[in-house]
Length: 138
Image 1 (cartoon, rainbow, N blue to C red):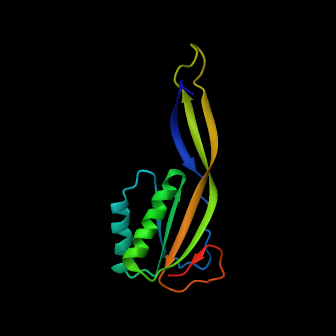
Image 2 (cartoon, rainbow, N blue to C red; image 1 turned 90 degrees about the vertical axis):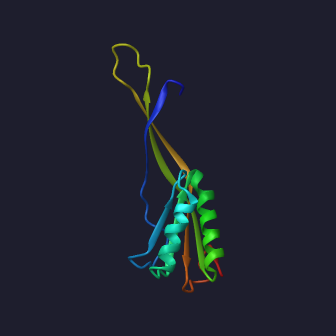
Image 3 (cartoon, rainbow, N blue to C red; image 1 turned 135 degrees about the vertical axis):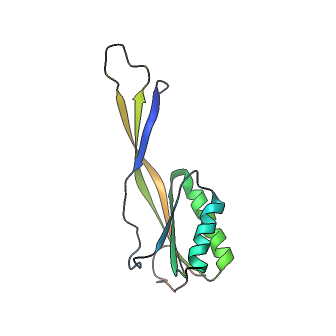
C-alpha cells in the first residue's frame, strides 16, 4: 500500500435504530476530527434554548469514544436524561489510487470495504421504554 494514496472515503447511510422519533429530532454526527467544545455548544443550545426533548449522538470508528464522551458531558450538565444505546457495524468504502502506475498503463484504483463499529445514543427528557435493550435510567 506504500504506492497508494487514499482518494475518498464514503460510509453507507443506514437509518437510525430508534422508532417513534419526532421528525425534528436533532442528530449530532460525531466525526474523528470534531471538537467536543463545538459539539457540546450546539447540542446544549438545542436542548436548553430551543427546548428539544430528545437528541441523538452517533459516531463510528475512532469517533465512538468521542461520542460517548459527549453523551456523558450532556448527562452531567443537564441531569435527569433517559438513555438508549445501540451498537452496530457500518460499512466504509475507501478508494485508493496507485501513485506509481507502470508507464503506459491506466491509473489503477483499489476499493476497500471496511466494517467499523458504530454507536447511536438517544438522550431524552421524556421517559423511554425501560424494557428496550440498551436502556439506562437517569
